[in-house]
Length: 581
Ligand code: C2E
Ligand code: MG
Ligand code: MG
Image (cartoon, rainbow, N blue to C red; front, top):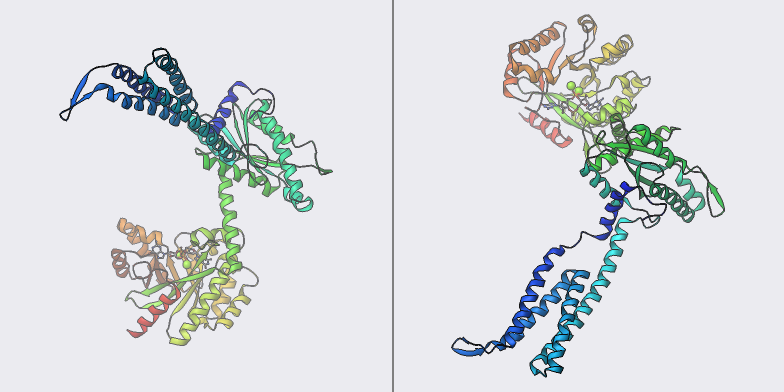
């Protein structure tokens, strides 16, 4: 694998791993001794039986021991054949030595002592030698192909440097050894443009040149660290770096790989000036498994690309994974908006006598692979990246269309509650959008409720209040969602034109824990009532909770105990059954 000067002594480990990968897993040669002993025993028995006058009785018949000479001779020969079959080169050498040693004594017996009994032995030995040679020749051929296949499995076809598989194996080996090392993800910047403008052939030549520069650097030992370079795919490479003792040393090595690209690359009479982005993660500080190390290094490299950082080298930090996740979810939301795979479920709300009050529309999203992503995961991202108004509107429009039509058809007196994020509510076009939805879907404002989280009172007090009054004036109801989780003041709440307080599930969960938690919920309900609001408890799952809520005069409940979020058809069935009863 060497292309440069002799590697430093401890670079051997890396080379050893590669050799191991290329050479297969070795054969247990020790067991050949069993065959050698068996062969010697059989040969001794051949000699003894051929010279013996002993006659033994078998099944009442007298049989001379000499009759077994052929059997012992066959056992001896089978042993030599097994040796070649199972022990490759060593087996071949041992069996040839054994067979050739026997030849002189057989020849003496036949030609000097004129022993006719040795003539079959002569031919058996001769044919066994021919068989052993043929088997060995065949073995060599198979081995050659196997080596070729193994080489291909660990070598990148284009550049001739180790491939992704070799890199993974090495990293897994290094993890087992437990010593500090770094995995570096390297991606060429703007490489795509070479392929696009000059064609793939030129692109390939550039890749070969870069791989060769980096490989020479890795093998030369001049970086002072132990480096191993692989090509992952396309214009992505990986480096595994060991034998450094400080971040500074590691940084120096990475800089050398960066510098290796500084000299222009000339292919097909064109000069190319390339740079690469390097992201690295260290074992064991950043991650403790091969897969995780590659993922962390990738996250750092992607961040270099994303921020177009001029430094081009970045160490992984845990925040990057969160960012990476946010970016992934953002992409999924955009795709879902484009492909119209954002939809809604309807969770029923009931009064305490189990009569249907209406439904809360809850967003659901299907990603490109068809998996459903929970709103707990994508709503916060949509808020963060400014896509929440699009998500809200989609759910609002679709659910209002469905429920509006259902009310018209069945005359059911039910409320549709939709969640509207504060960011969406405060947008300039919100009122216009609201009117449009009402107009297009035919839902009447008195069947509509908008849920706003308590935070709206803290964040955007005055402006929000004006807007909420405007909504109320249209005849739409207002619910304060997740009540109790924010810190709204009583005086502000008093002036707030809401219709419904939604007590957050966390308070309902705690109710069973003790009298004071129960009293806390009871006092929220009382305050709500004093201020003129109805109160609904969210996340009611158990009978005890239901009974308690009844006893402290809660008005409505929404929870798995009486209804999970339902698809449209199920919600419609529920409405029908309620109308029928
Ligand atoms: P939320 O508005 O407080 O909605 C109630 C959440 O509690 C829903 O979760 C519902 O499935 C869950 N839930 C209701 N009863 C139970 C119960 O008995 N047990 C348990 N364990 N959970 C219960 P979901 O659908 O995952 O929604 C989570 C949050 O995502 C919602 O909380 C809301 O803040 C947000 N969200 C959902 N859809 C939208 C939307 O269209 N727009 C906006 N802005 N936010 C939405
Ligand atoms: Mg809600
Ligand atoms: Mg809630």
